[in-house]
Amino acid sequence: MPKYDITVTFDLETSLDPDFYGHRWDEGVTLEGIEDGSYFSTQHVTVDGGSLSFQVEATDEGDAESKAFEVIQEGSEVEDTNGWTWVAANVSVEVEPVEEPMDLVKATELVTAYLMDQELPEELKEAFRFILSRIS
Image (tube, rainbow, N blue to C red; front, side, top):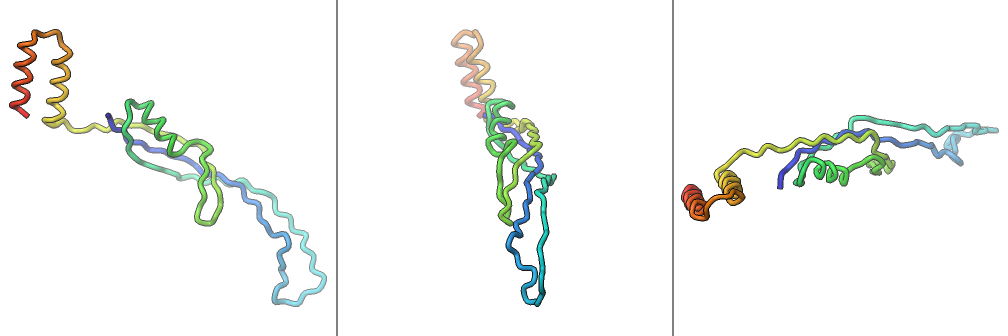
């Protein structure tokens, strides 16, 4: 099965909503009459720079792209080491076929498969099989 190099680029998005309700600002200090009128609004944060590279075996480029989307896709969630959950956004997948160098085994398989598909006399096919078996 052919191999494909995959490069996925993406952003991560999250919303931050500081949770300071009930926090005591005056710990260790004597204050009188402190009132906390703080209001922190939710902030949407987008960070860029996500990039994954890997290789998959697939039947064609479309199948390779589908396999990449099994790893990461728009809306995939991931938790970072701070415990924040991020959502993948602007996911872009690039698929490149891997050009494997020709070797004797591969060449023999390709030529054999080609010859077997041709309308040739059986004796000629046998002659080609004999020559190919001697080469390899």
